[in-house]
Structures are given as C-alpha cells and as structure tokens.
Amino acid sequence: MKLQNKVAIVTGAGTGIGRATAILLAQHGVKIGIIDRVSAQSQETVQIIEQHGGQAMWQSADVSQADQMERAIAQVMQQWGRIDIVVANAGINGAWAPIEDLLPEEWDTTLHTNLKGTFLTVKYAVPHLKQQSEGSIIIVSSVNGTRGFSLSGATAYACSKAAQVAFTKMIALELAKYRIRVNVICPGAIETGINDHDSQRRHLEEIREPVEFPRGNIPLTGGHPGKSEDVAQLVLFLASSASSYITGTEIWIDGAESLIKG
Image (cartoon, rainbow, N blue to C red; front, side, top):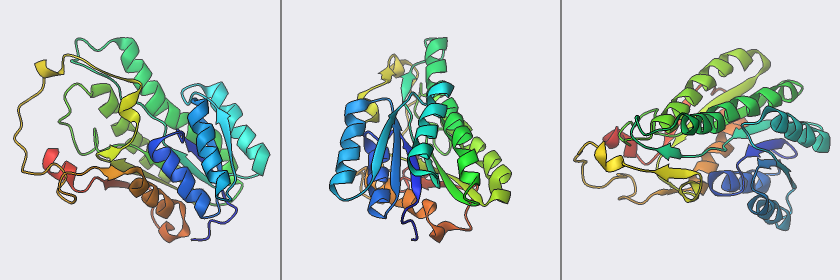
C-alpha cells in the first residue's frame, strides 16, 4: 500500500477505533503522532506500537482547544518533518436527554469536541499536508445523524456527526487541487470505550418512540457489534494509494444495521 515512512496524526488514539487505527497503520510502516488528552492510555498505545518495531509519539491536547492543537501538530511536524495522513477520530457521546433538559453547556461540550475538534485538527494539519503535494484526511463520524435518527435524546451528538459529513464534502472540494483527499467514515455499533466516559443519559424513556425492528439488529453479523479493527481496516484503505480516486465520500460501516434502524 506504499505507506512506509509516511507520518499520520491520529486523535483519540488511547482506546477503541483510534488505538486500533494507530496500531494498524504502524504495522504498515507509518510513523504515528497520537494526539489525546488521556496520558496513560495514549502512552500504552505508543508502547504497543514500539514493542512491535513501529515508531510513535504522544502529544497531550484537548482537540477543542486551538492553541493546544496547533502546538501538538507542530510537535509532530518537528519530530518527523512531514505529515501525510490525518485521522480525526477523537469524539464523545456527550449528554443524551430530552431537548428541554439538555443544558446549553452540554450542547457546547459535544459540538466543541466532535465538530470544532475536527475543524482544528484539519486546520492545523493542512499546511503540512500541502507540502507533500498529496495526502489523506479521514474523519470518523457515525451512522447517528447521517443515516440513523432513532436514538432519542442524542440530538447534540447526531448534529455534530451530521456536520462532520458536510465539513468533509466542503473541504474535499477545497483541497482537491492539492491532491489531498478527504473522506468520512460512519461506524455503527462498534466495541469501543466511548460509552465508558464523557457520556450522560437521562429521562430518555420519556421521549423514546416505540419502534419494532426486524429480527436481528445487525443483519450481517446476527446482532454482534463490529470491532475497532474493522474500522481501522477501512481507515487503512482510505489512507493508502488504493483509494487514490476517492474523496468527499461518506462510507457507512455498520453491517447494514442503519438500513433497518433509520
């Protein structure tokens, strides 16, 4: 796939999809710059990569903070002198609640992390990508807000994810002349740690609509969720020259779940 010695930035690589992506890219010779605010988990990802002969570094940053992201990306550039691949993966579920219960500050937290964080990651990486005369940006969105809308109370989350798709299409056209491809992947049910932190759910029974789905929530797997490694394989494809004619495209990876649960 011709990825040897390329450099990738992966946000939120301490766990889940981000970690699986960082490890898989490193296995294909990519140097990994991890940007994450969680120290112990990020350093563990670095150790896993290094134990298998790869190269990785970690920079502490909150993706929603411009000064921190500018500094972190500059540090990756200083370390390896180039950036070829950007995986904007960091995100949170945030608060899920009826609209009248959803606090303005909870809305802001979700949008700042998921959408502003994507914007800042891409904004500060693009000048370095342009120096290579090509590059690949992969944004991690979700089926929620893009093809599925049945998770009552997830309004802020769904809006942030829908906006990531619009952002992708706008930036893909803007950057095409520089041979920088921008695509967005929309995972469904994936075994990750996103529900373990930064998540609040309250009063959802009051607004949930009764829906009778066909038997089996994930048709392709008989109800079993996907794995982070499944998503990482898609990121690898989009990061490589194998997808050189693909840009501005959203790809759902959910075992057909959203086709019956939209």
